Amino acid sequence: MIAGAMPLAEVKPQERRRHQRVKVVLIGRYMLEDRREYPCKTIDISPGGVAIEGEIKGAIGERVVAYFTQIGRLEGSIARHLTNGFAIQMRLPVLKREKLADQLTWLVNRHALGLPEDRRHERIIPYSSRTTLKTTDGTEYPAKLLDISISGAAMTIDAAPPIGSLVTVGQTEAQVVRHFNGGIAVEFARLLPADTFNESAKL
Image 1: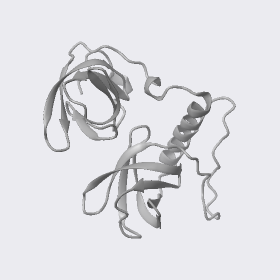
Image 2: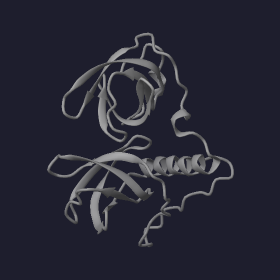
Image 3: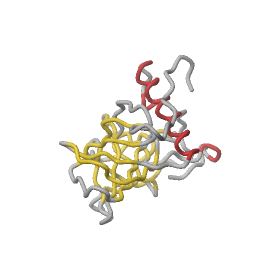
Image 4: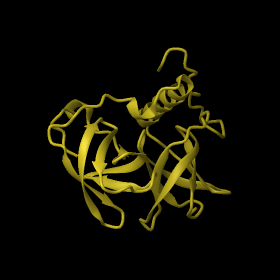
């Protein structure tokens, strides 16, 4: 936990809301029981639940799996509907819950300190820069990696998928987060393994 950070509330089962919720906007996607995926973003989140903004609400009690670049996979059931989305109740194992609490503390502190999100991990220039980018409609584009980190990549490409759209870079699922002249930047759906990350890493 970063020095000076406000710790998240500890678990107290007798409380109706187990954890303090924090307002952090994370871009991701979610899958309902029909296995269809939809884009979403968080409204607020805690290690016990998350409220998301999404176009399809699903049924109360329905199982839902969500993926967010910064924190990975979350799973739970729909507890209630909101005007523009729904709230998910999660029952995480202790270790996963503690890890999520640490991740949220970092995200809150990063925002408070004004740290740039896309530079939170070291970036390197890969030995092999050629890759492909596939959009959700199955279209593939050749691309050239400029740099990569365990959380994302920048590349030149003759295409400009909309910011927030889901793509696949090589074999790695990602989301477009920025456009620049001649290319795009993406964040991966899951962090690359830090212990094997180097210039030879393949996406």
